[in-house]
Length: 216
Image (cartoon, rainbow, N blue to C red; front, side):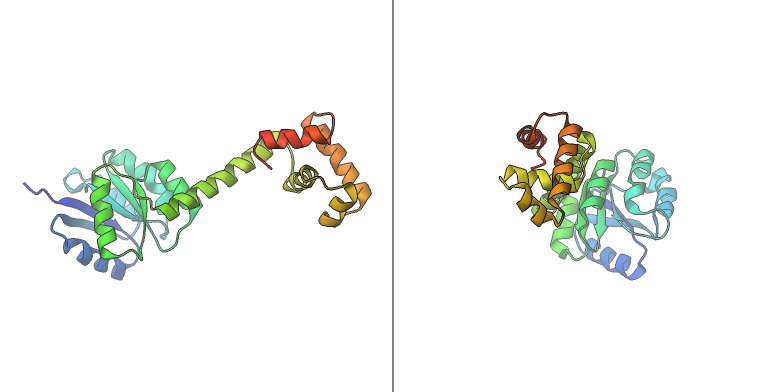
């Protein structure tokens, strides 16, 4: 019985697939069972139960449907499949979406041979493949998405949030006007609109409301 980790590689560059296959098969416990040049071809190959890999290395960007958008369909076809995304650059939004869709992790194509092999082995042990830098990028991006959701919820623009942050720092209307390159009268109108939108009574309460939502 073959105890090796079986792997499929999905990438639109033949030279990269060949090099990665050679790299993986240099390991004692990894065997590449097939390659595909796009996600739809991978989906077709995956439907053959005799050729189902344990791990799929899936390129993020390819002709046709991209790897990130195909993660759910691939997992629906093979629920036990471990999918690790391959990418040339770290993109927080893609990483977040891929993991949300069910991918186990993310590997840069520039990773060393030992890192790639180790990542596949760790994924088969149930570990997520995300390094600390990627975690930091994820958290930063998630924070931005959360803030945008909060902005939408309370009905203020980023420009209005900027103004309230100046209020929180104790700036006068004149100082705020200079910072934002607007007139003092425009500053007053913006403050009145913010107070009305938030349903509060004064600028102090407006500041408190945005602190509560984590926006300043």
